[in-house]
Amino acid sequence: MPVRGEGVFVVKRTVDLAGAAHLELISGVVHLRPEDAMVDAMLRGWRNQQLARNLKARTIEGREQRVRRFLTFTNEYPWGWTSAHMDEWSATLTGEDHLAPSTVRNYQGTLRLFTEFLIDHRYGWTTACEESFGTYPVAIAHEWNTLPHLQDYEGDPEARPFTREELQLFFDYADEQVVRAIRTGRKGALAAYRDATLFKVIYGWGLRRTESSRLDLVDFGRNPRAPQFGRYGTLNVRYGKAKKGQPPRRRNVLTVMDWAVEAVEDYAENVRPRFGFPDHPALWVTERGGRLQPSSINDRFGTYRDALGLHKELVVHSLRHSYVTHLTEDGVDRMFIQQQVGHENSSSMAIYTHVSDDFMNSALQRALAPAFA
Image (cartoon, rainbow, N blue to C red; front, side, top):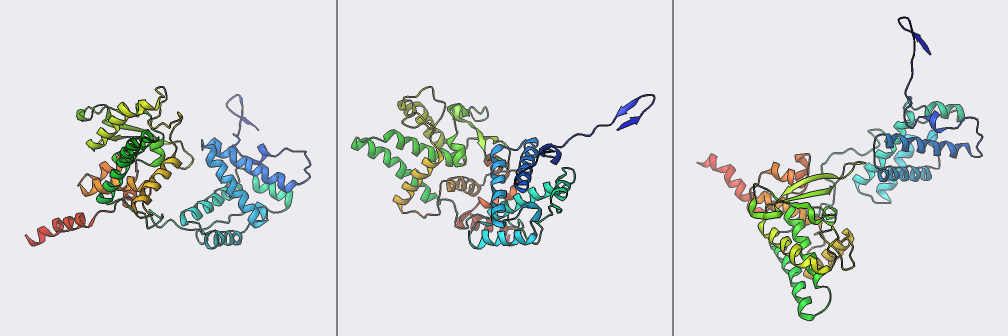
């Protein structure tokens, strides 16, 4: 629409939003199943809207799968959804599928995002539905029918770190498998040495399983403030846990355990070359020249844990829990530990800290000392 300016005509333009209805719907085309065509256009528009926000394709695909699952559950189209459908679906996820609260909240959040996209007048889907079907989508996710986020941690309450005695027992057993394989002359000594070192690195730098799997040799570097660690003074973690829809987060972890340096240095310089793949960048290579995968790390860990008769609640991630807990017991500053493990919020540290009775009693004595001085 021309707008008169000072001596000239200025054309006022509006910018189309990615995912808008008029961009996804083809006018003048008669569909055999107009309802299905409308749903496909909605999901296509939502996908484009999320791509415009630079979300990862894997995140978008997962959300679309959950929306289609809700479509199947309700047997209704989005312009026929009600809050009652959300209530019934949530009850099924919790009571029949027995999903964790965090998972149920994630599913509910997906439906909230999708319906909020549909009812936003800037995208035009309500108008398109009303013109085609005489009705339109409404909000179905509210504070009274979705799970609130009340706790920082909602995982398995049985999860815990290793005690120092259990950890030493586990590492000793892993080392014994190397000696046993060499003595008996059977294959697997290199893999056993690799895995024994891997578990020490996970604990020694407080890593997640996937972070460890994706490590390369060049990720270790020098720390001028800790020259005693040589080229293993810092570790560049390039595949840290990502925020929803975002790329992996990077962080540098400073070395604090000298014995862990000795273990990885010996492996990198004396054992890894024997695998025979000098050009492979991975720190943890397989006998066939591949990168060690998280599932293989799980399998080896489970074998060792079960052979020792340790509790089932101890998992690979327990090594990371142990790193935080043991540094806390040793009096290391919590802010430093938070930066080491890549937590943005200090409240997240609570889920990793399970300090021992000795530490708690010592802290109690320090707290009470002034009162009884």
